[in-house]
Image 1: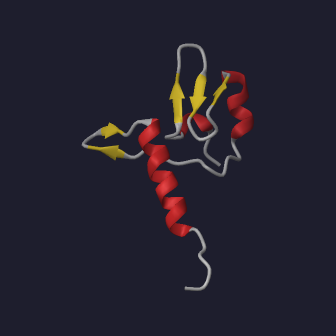
Image 2: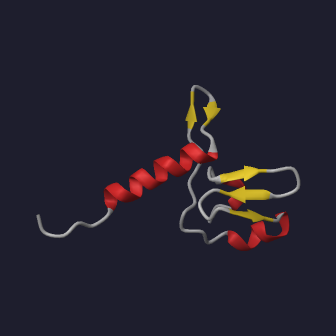
Image 3: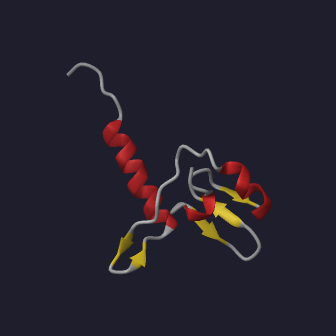
Length: 73
């Protein structure tokens, strides 16, 4: 399973990390324990530059909404 440090939703701050999915600070020691995250997404690159964590979150939310089960039409 990929680690948090490879996730597109993680933003590196000066002394810690910020997870945009859970909107919380994560200290570097806790990153190893978060390997089973269901919301992991690989970074997406456009024109050689990675999207920002906020852009990754918006794309992931849109994807989740499109896959949401809907009742009878």
